Image 1: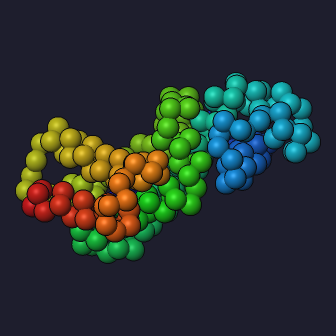
Image 2: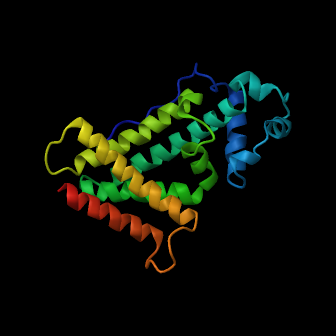
Length: 204
């Protein structure tokens, strides 16, 4: 069964109206530039507030970027959950719906994806990012568990989740970096789906 995606509480850091506006502006900018080019001063100027405002709400640039990543990843997790739900009860279809949701997120919002899953910020830098990452992992865990032919230990389930995640993420990153040889036939999406099919076949 799929987990319910959580929502931010109104009293956590970054929940004020100004904080939400700061995050929304940064998310909009991430459509065009990587997080390394995000300027807190420039965002504050666009919103007509003090350049200290982001620091007051988030403590620093790292905390701010983590909050931005948290909001963006939470939306991606909600979209993935919806896509999995629409795929119906078949676990195999759910697995491929999760693949499609991830690939769409990575391809349509590459800078946000890299911020959420890259080394710039840590999950512990903001509670919303930690929660969104947990939500996405639980989706992965639910889909992986549903595709098992027989009961397995929790430790084995976690290992298989890691292999599933590593397959999707790893092939996507190799393709984004141009590291898949041109001689390999087929688009990246097809390679990922075929790899997931092999995993599920092995589990069953």
